[in-house]
Structures are given as structure tokens and as C-alpha cells.
Amino acid sequence: MEEKRFQKNDSGFTCSNCGREVLPMGRSSRNHCPFCLWSLHLDENPGDRAAECGGKMEPYSVSPDPKKGYVIHHRCQKCGAERNCKAALAPCTQPDDIRLLIALTAKH
Image 1 (cartoon, rainbow, N blue to C red):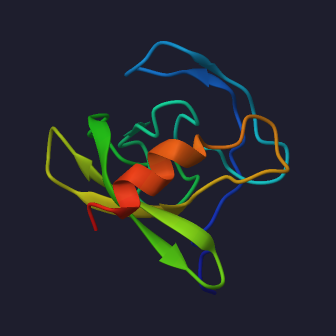
Image 2 (image 1 turned 45 degrees about the horizontal axis):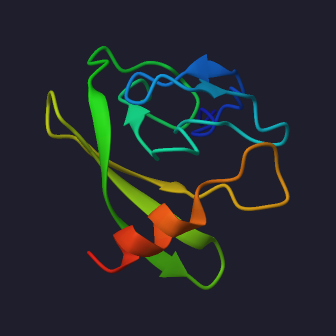
């Protein structure tokens, strides 16, 4: 039997980059800060918290996606791993800063 690749893990946290409190999203797994868009390298697959690295994941670009809205591209500053995640847009608790998303779209 195949193991699920996505595990819901919707916990709040304190952002390791900007220090702001991030609330659970309430409908999916929150894995990045909505204020600065940074993340931590905690997952091998979304929500599993199986990565041993723990490095800070820098948002280096954003690409628009017709089905997902915006996709944030992160790179781990510790090991270089790259991950993509869907941006959290309104309506939700603490939607991602749209100005940062647009600014990073220009870098793509």
C-alpha cells in the first residue's frame, strides 16, 4: 500500500526569520510565514516533519499558477534543497503578504 505524500500539520509557530507569531491556517498545513514568506526545512513531503536539516528556507521567487494562485519557491540556506508551496491567499487566517508575492513574481 502506498503511503500518503501529504499530511495535514496545521500548527502555529514563531517565525525564525522575522519573529512574528503565525497562527494555524485552519484548512491546510501552514509551512511558511505570511509576513516574510520564509519557511524552515522541516518536511520531506508536505506536513510530515521528517527532514533532519531544519535550515531556514528563503523565498527566492514566486510563480503564478492558474489553478493554485501563486506558488512560492524556497531554497534551504543550510543544505540547498528547494521546495515549492502554494501561497495562502484570502480568505484565511493571516493571508500571505500580497505585496511580497508580487515582488517575488518579478524575480521569477
